[in-house]
Image (cartoon, rainbow, N blue to C red; front, side, top):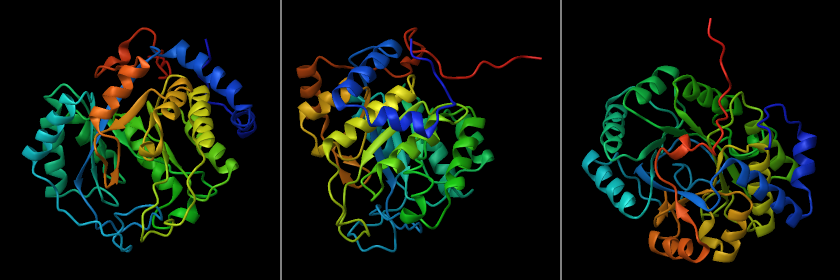
Length: 335
């Protein structure tokens, strides 16, 4: 069985990433089959509970207040509306429900108190509850853990070297600190990145190196492809060639064998055959529903038709106790 390692070098990851494509996919499929139930794919749903008006300058993001993208600013949703959306997502086959708020960081105020209410309420639906709210302190992470938050998403986006070309309003270390705070609270970590930001292959390898050398691998690694949005600095970036997405999925699978690898933004551009190759290469999680925050995404019905065609089955919530999924948590010695 493929060993779960945290001491990868960039050179090793680069060698994997640059293998002949079909050989790379075959290796990734074998690793995937050793660590996961083949053909089982988690369906996640993402809801923007507070939209637009963010003070950050992420060059890809339509929710940044400084860009004129046509995104309407919406205040924090009512808890009852969030629960209704979660029930809808569950009925569509989703086992994880993620709530996103366009904040630079969480503030200890009434809005955060309402998010805690939302987490507690959605938690009663027997779904994995996830949030993505920006930077988070240790005490805020602890509060989210106390109300039953299952996972927290905070992407590193790209390599440390390329990061400053994309975002200047917070540092790479800020992102890693939030991941550390989430981990300390005992919450599952969801962290990946975006390809198509003007990065090089070395930057893509660098992003995977950051994640694969964390003390514990993220339980979930979203691989997004840029969805260019008019009004953002990256609006004219070229579409990412499909083979490059497959390389990212396959390499992530090999260097982080026990993590879920999620096809995220950009999936609407993929044919069923292209998605099938990503599943072969180790993707075992998708975002479903009509929107990913503010960008289009395939609807539940079309995904169910794809699952039927490919013989895939949705993964149940909290299924990671499956004996075939080896834990990537380090073993702690007790005094």
